[in-house]
Length: 450
Image (cartoon, rainbow, N blue to C red; front, side):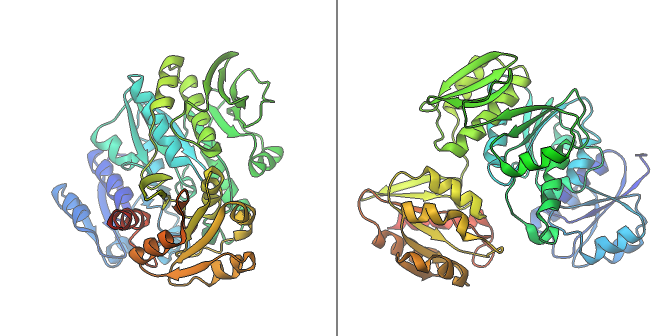
């Protein structure tokens, strides 16, 4: 890409502004265009950097005559501006692709999956940092990849990548890629075609060569089905809950021990020593641990890091225990599969808080766990009918709320000493909250007020 290129950035949030800063640093002529109002902090950054922008429409974008368009992941391909730019044969890429082109000789661990990718990416960053490597946490977690490359490039990048970001790559090639799991999510962006969504996840390995590594969940049916019909170039490494992994390299569980094997050299850690509990976190630990072993990090550092690691805010976060009732914030669980993992980890009778913007959820996926572990459901949302219709045959109490303080109070009233209240909504948050963080923070504040 020539320094005199014109770069059009669609979207002026973290991803778009990060791409704009990098484009300006590299000497490109830049226009940032947003269909809505640009938030104050991002507006200030663009003004300070002298970057041209427009908001509340795309008038200038249509006549900018860009050589490359960097599209923020929140903008769907069916958006009018995207379709019209495609018709003009513009190169349209994602921010991670743009950042990749300027990362020089640094190395990348990229993690995707329907669930667990934020925790695993932070684990990778934690292990690499504790081992003394120059690493940064970027992507869907932390700051944008492009911003990091523009402002403080590092030797390693731990990158959380979504299917939306992977849809817009043309050369992005991680040295180590991880696909944790693939379950139906965001299908409205893929014309409700699960095959298209699966392909998007596997795009993470599209440009990998035989020198690169791809870590895969051996127990995931959708991953296995894809592998049956597609050839991949990267060296495949598998993680599994089974002790039947006889490969020289991979992760597995045997007799309450987590094994991280690399070239027949085994690292064994008791699952009881791990700071994060639940099978899903054992998968996350295996994926992060194998990534670290491939990167050449010493076994002792990996062990210390996995034992000391603390989880993400809003992901199975223990908030407080009030008169014998534990309150757990899992607001980041915005799909049914995430709730499955949360319920799987619960060891006491649970009051489950569900609700929000339903994305066509199939609640049958968690029905057996709800029967086994849930004593009441509290629906927090504007439209709770899908949840009520799904679980009313179970004959457990189902109550409705539309405010967080009311939700917490009603949940507490339904609980007994020794029970837990779990906010794990299975839905997006935008009907009543700014985002899942706002929902989780309001939950924590409400718990502390009772």
